[in-house]
Length: 509
Image (cartoon, rainbow, N blue to C red; front, top):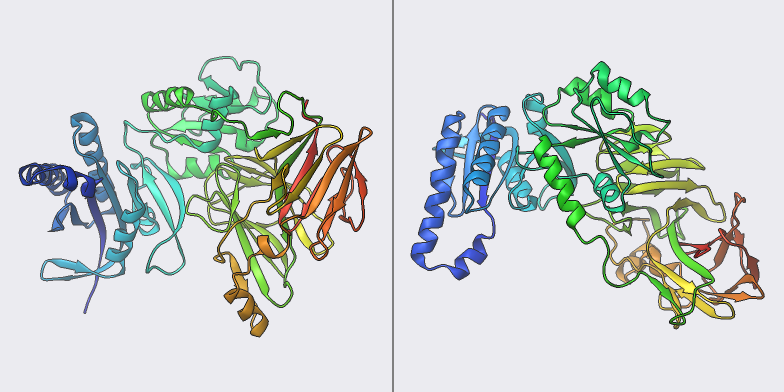
């Protein structure tokens, strides 16, 4: 049977199940009629057709990917003006079989799976639609790579941006919260820059001399610190801007302004503190900070042939997530970093989403959530991904703090990432037993009580507590790990490594 290339669009009423539980039959009928009255005329006006009504959802077909996206933008624009119902839309472009007015095929399945990931009020689309659409007509941004039920591998997803919306990238949002966002408008002089600034260039035409002149007036900055606000941008201008690791904020000026103001209103920190000081009312003399991810070398004990970890926007490393911004993978050849979102650069070079690069000692990686340094390590490790987190413990002179998966109080607990989705197993009975027994790198390579840290006479001592899981030290200016088989003396800014966790010794002042 012959197939045709079509853009498959699904619309869906957000929170329909909740509405059903709260509405009578007449109320539900009105909701569904409102959905149909909104969607059908817009779809037909853009050259599409409604294939079928699935109650709270419509499936539509378009011969043009650009028209399908324009129809979706029209729907969201109408919703923003009229209020009332909330709609999500998702689409992809590819071959379908049209039978008796209906449509079937992998593209239909993929569009439905993308819809399942799409938040309320948003428009997401797949790679097929991106390839086929006229990019200069559609404001869009990447949202990530996703494992979709029944679809092999991970699928790239993108978001079309209506005129009334702007989703601030994590790095821009974080900079606004801490006062490091500098908004540089066309014609204005560059202001004094705070430490670690993020520059948002506003009112500039992409690729224009004025934009280049504005950049030339700035001091030397990490390319990932430069963000250009724009709405419609030609593919050539997008590529020229982002290829060096610089970022885009997609949105109309009013929408960007609203998003920034909403960010400034948001609570930036919980009422509790991430820093735990052992004696209430006593100033800590030392902070133990979880400051990175240690990467054991593979193959590992004939059990693990390779593995990966994903970095979330809040700087936590997890086994696997749909919200990841980068992934680090360790194989027998070493460690590689893969960009999973826009705004990632390594060694000063921008990485396209899905692109990977081999990590080398002292390589600087810039991500939307901040910078990471890769350090070579040796001693059975492929390297360390170094960046301070908010997971920390304050220690006062004369006190002892434990480290481990379940340390005695007072102690700093290591991350315990459950699940085996990030592991590729070796063949053989030993790997099979480990897999069946719930083996994870985090649990296998570090003990419940791993090491003790004590401040004595103005110095810091580290004592190993586990007989089988080794503890290591990386001194500030060293390039190789040192195994701590007995009590060792360490200094501020040295690091302790155990299993997959790196702990930094910091001056709390």
